[in-house]
Length: 438
Image 1 (cartoon, rainbow, N blue to C red):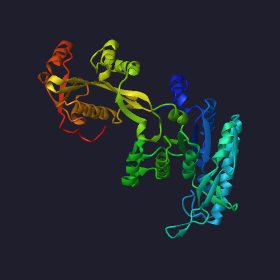
Image 2: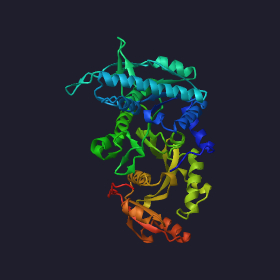
Image 3: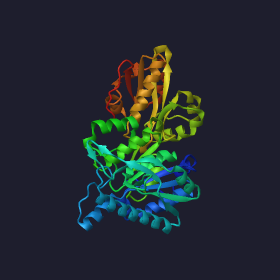
Image 4: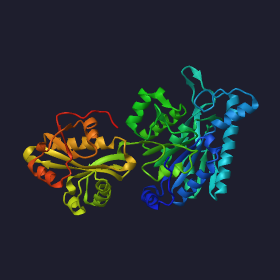
């Protein structure tokens, strides 16, 4: 597992400008507060605050509610604030919430951080749902964002329990995952980070790393029963809601993993699950300001003999042919499209993906982007040359094996001079690539 290197200051410094003086809402499960790694999380939060990043903490208390119920030998009507809350469960929920709030405030004090808890949430009864009266289960009506903002401005960390109050002073039990969405929305947070006491969501055993809002919605609709652990479903459901109301990034992390929070926040590789809007990833034409990053990326491919050797001056001369793939405004892949109008052919060249972002379908997205650009330019065939990715282009990209005779005359001269004997691959642009992704 990749862990964050505190010595990698460049990675931290790259993210600080976009996060400084903005707010993160961090939602902790009660089991995370009880875990040994909680002290490490408090250190991470201290670092965020030192970088002028505002932090509001929302916490759950399900683990503590179950512990109290077991201790008293009583049966809960519901343990996580999503079902019916009877009077007995409400009493235990209030006690458990106060217990967790106290532990968080105590931990913040240990790290020389100031925190404050309060009645930040105005709630109303969830009511009768599906013919069932949910009694003391509530729903957030309003977040007292001015009070929370005033604490943040005074360098005080708001601690928000899963409890809400109505105008008559009645207390309602709330689901902390849902509360976190409402708080993030009210504070215009740039990140909502769920810290759970289990591994991030997986589908058929494979970790879910990055999902757009559309991908997340389809996943929950079509493969809901295949997602594990089941506890992660609440996080995914609420992450989708948060993304739809404008929270740019929602993360689901194993809060028991040392350095997991910092790794997720200060790298575009991460260790958890990220739900984001489509703008998080983008392909665009390269600009002169991208030259240094493109050159650094292509050097790795040239050193591994995966790409034809070019000088920085050569790349600068044809920079308009290049296009790049960005993740969170960081260049992670590049490629070039060279046009040969006289033969209506286009060459896909210099495709290289940063090793940290391999096997995420980025290469195929680059191929499809090049196809679209070539078609728009009136080209009828796309070709590429490869020494080490031949199977990829055939199996994933829909290319077929060709010969040097398939190359345009100017490109054939360069091919013969290079002596690399690369495999020529060709693809008529009327044929769409297979949809399966690696």
